[in-house]
Image (cartoon, rainbow, N blue to C red; front, side, top):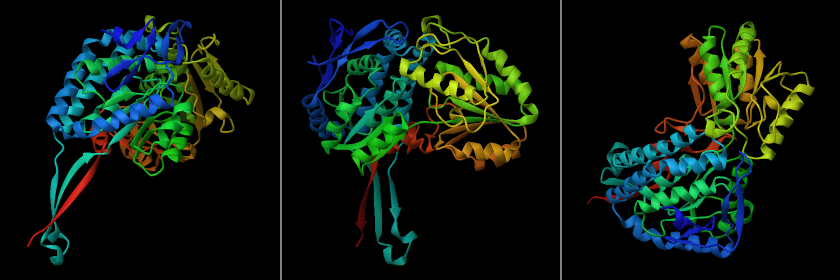
Length: 481
């Protein structure tokens, strides 16, 4: 069923409802063992402009379809995605080195996300506002408020969740009557093209979604020059997010960027539970998650006990091949491993104590705990995006709050403790989008609001919030005689 999207292991462009061959291609290799997985299209200017034109031509007919019918089409696509879940999970695990169990879970979660997005869309209602609530002079006015499509939405997904974070952008955009120009990460594009094929088999009308693959640095400027993009929905690094913001100017944007999520462990915390959450939160998928726990801020009086428990748990983490369902697998590329290793070496040179179950093997970094970490070490504030956990001891709660807030990021934080009044007092002072109480930082459930402040993002995601951000309010004012 997926043979349509490739020929001789060379993947095609999905343009105006057809899979067409590309003249230029980029070879994709598995981070696991450097196995050649296939070549993806390296699109040139004409391809990109044709894709934008296709989105534009399809917009009027797609948004004219009633909401109920758009929802039914998306439900059919969700069923196809579920039907091919194992095949897609298999290529996902190979392409981004994510353990197979998590890869399969990601696909199934994406199916559920589409279904819940459909259900929520059917609950979105317009409203009528009466002018007499504001003034007797406006008593004869009323506003009929509805939502309408924005236009063409540029959806840019990251390598680490090429199915789920693509669906979280595509589904609400299409349901609200937009067309989608879809740019997956280069490493992750093969998985994303399989996703689009599954959605297509569900009955998507031609032209409402078109794929853009290739180097972002090459095609980004082409897209921004077209002036036809109505909104950008991006997940990726803060530096690229800032660049996109400058390139596209004053159009709506939703951005999920970097993070430096802290786990604050108070003196009365259940240390066993806290350590469980911290290790899972820090090392799941080798720490390649924006919501990974990236530092521990622990009260000095319990630090030794917590560190001992964390060391024990880290020593039991499985390391190796994602098809053996190991938690720690090779990082996405050697450059990422180089960066993580650089942060570890900098910390050790400045006095940190390193605990690890092994050393680096190509792009595989063994899980590493850094103790005796001070604030002059790069790892205290840099986002590693790898399996390294710095532990910083603090004298007081205020010190923990100050260190947390000193970061340029503000995605999530966690607080572990038993005094709920004290925890809420801390939570109110933390500069971040979400505070987790006695639990690890994570995205989801998908109906919860997901957001970052400062350099961690723009706008709010989550099923209802994504539907709202993928549409704009239209107000029609009636003047009664």
